[in-house]
Amino acid sequence: MYQGELNFDGLIGPTHNYSGLSEGNIASSKNSKKTSNPKKAALQGLKKMKLLIEMGIPQGIFLPHERPSLSFLRTQGFSGSDADIVGSAAKISSLLLNQSYSASSMWAANAATFSPSVDCQDAIAHITPANLFSMQHRRIEANFTYQQLNLIFKSSHFKIHKPIKSTDLMSDEGAANHLRITNSHLKKGIQVFVYGRDTSKESLNFVARQSRAASEYIANSHKLDMKQTFFLKQNMKAINSGSFHNDIVSLATENVFIFHEEAFEDSKHKIQKIKNSLKAQEDNFFIEISKNDIPLDILVNSYLLNSQLVRNSSGDMTFIMPTEVNNYSECKEWLVWIKENTPIKDFKYVDIKQSMMNGGGPACLRFKIVVNKDEFNNINPNFLLNPDLIKRLEALINNSYRDTLEIKDLTDPELINESYTILDNLTQIFKTGSIYNFQKE
Image (cartoon, rainbow, N blue to C red; front, side, top):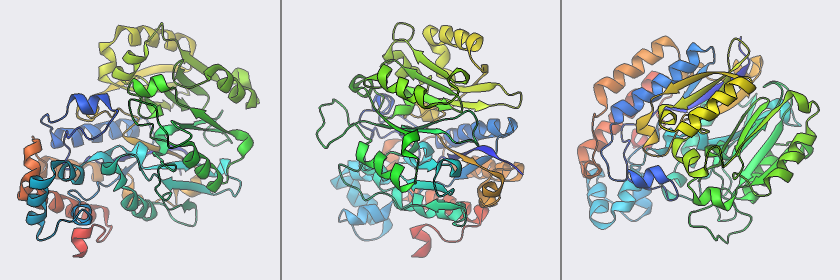
């Protein structure tokens, strides 16, 4: 019987590639058109999941989405056989073809927003899949995410909302823009929603992806206590520096909240309001990173705060960071201070370079939830990792995933067959039945 934090990571799919589709994502643009390694990417992701299990934290998994998404290409006017559709898209619009092959569902932090039952006035855990309106290649993820969430979480204990109807004013990017502060996972907490814009008007170099209207809609539909719910606006400088999601410049776990001083607008006033709402302020750690200690560009490039902060078995906290953090002396000096002055006493580094090259750190790869014992028992166990499942997944990846994938390979009809065969095998391993479109045709 388990209760507490539980993470679901996206299993990285066989079409993992670097198409450079994500506007405002510096790493995605920098590595656009480079050769990817789907096999290595998937194994790196699994290794990170195994680390959480070794720490005593159960680990769930989301299946990859159907890629290429031929149904998406059909909505764009392409028709014929699978090979005809891909061939035509390659000739007419490489952008549409690349979007149909995007493996971005691997970043489960954008899958949905979760509110634990202890925070909700109806005492039910609520989950809303993100509509991901701001990026076409991600917008096509919402419906399958909704279907998958319904496969995993029993309706008797979880309320799965439909994605918010997509409009420019209702753009929702999921948990990557959501924080929760509490003295303990299973006690009522403070919910913080971070947004990039109030209106459809934008005066940014990059897209401000999360809208305030979407955040407010989710807070209300999740039946949150609005006295314990706060809305913080992203600093324009942070967005323009490459913090396309808030989880690059701030993070929170239980009573620890870390943020860069340039993460939010009107930061000191808004943060103080959150502090004042907490009953035992002295038991909480609000840690502001000064721009003099770590400049914003270094924080963004290192992905220091796009890390997982978890409570370990000793009662202290473990910081799970990408290995790239070691490349920055400013980050290493700050970590020395953190270890001496906060509950964070243990550091672990993970090699997820394949994900990092596309702009996704440890936090991007996971969707964090908090469950009590009864709720944990009402999660589909087929989606929870165990030693046997890990071995089966590793065998499938090693035997079926490509070692290299060039952008030009997306025009190869054989890649369609390879990808669909792997997805079909995954539905057998996870005992889902026919959930992909190609299985129903």
